[in-house]
Amino acid sequence: MKRIIVLLGLLSLLLGALPGMVLADTLSEIQDRGVLRVGMEPGYMPFEMTNQKGEIIGFDVDMAKRIAKAMGVKLELVSTAWDGIIPALLTNKFDMIMSGMTVTAERNLKIAFANPYIVVGQSILVKKEYAGEVKSYKDLNSPKFKVGSKLGTTGEQATKRLIAKANYISFETEQEGVMDLVNGKIDAFVYDLPYMAIANAQKSEGKLIFLDQPFTYEPLGWAIRHGNADFLNWLNNFLAQMKNDGTYDKIYEKWFLNDEWVKQLQQ
Image (cartoon, rainbow, N blue to C red; front, side, top):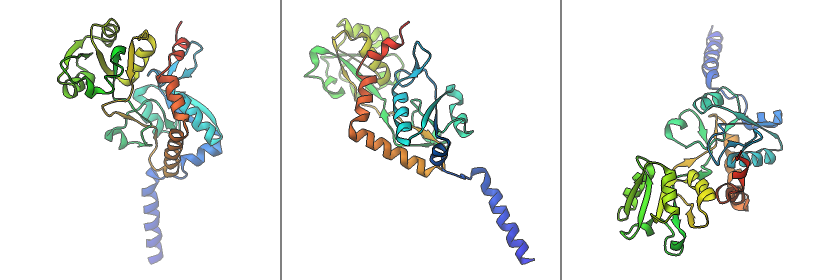
């Protein structure tokens, strides 16, 4: 009778563990399968977007290619709507999310994040004539400068909070702000890094300097399912290696400091 009770207790513990049990780390599954499946929504330039040929290209795509190559497996990109991308990861539609996803405490309750691979807070475009004088947002904190951003955005909030002494100019759209900057009507424009990278590549006309180091903090991270310690460790070590051997810088320059990729989108 005692043996039966012990066996029943063990069975109960096993059944209780099944819903959250990880039978094998995803890293092993990828290697056995020979394919890394990456989920992304191709609509966030320059991280992931669709070119004229219908191919998904972008910063995240190039990073995913490097990851797959380092693993010695093929890469499969799984286009997924943003509102369903976390549920799709949790139901094994793919192995990881690489789609410009901001690391938040709320999301972290559902999924695990590798170390942030980029911070996309507020960045600055400045008139070229101030190249030697303005090297960060702090240098703009003076009444001599006219600094713009978009109405009702975190860019506006950051400008009013951190560049409070400057003459602030509000714009209805980011396009208007950049245009006034190019035309010399303001001295600097503050906005989200991804948009500013594109604006600099497409519209600067050699008249602007891009201060591409964000001065507010919005980290993006690769997401995987909870319970995959080996996979998480591998991704963090891979990212550290990329950032120290120059590979990361080359990919960053291609998508954030260059405009050649824009031609692939033009019809």
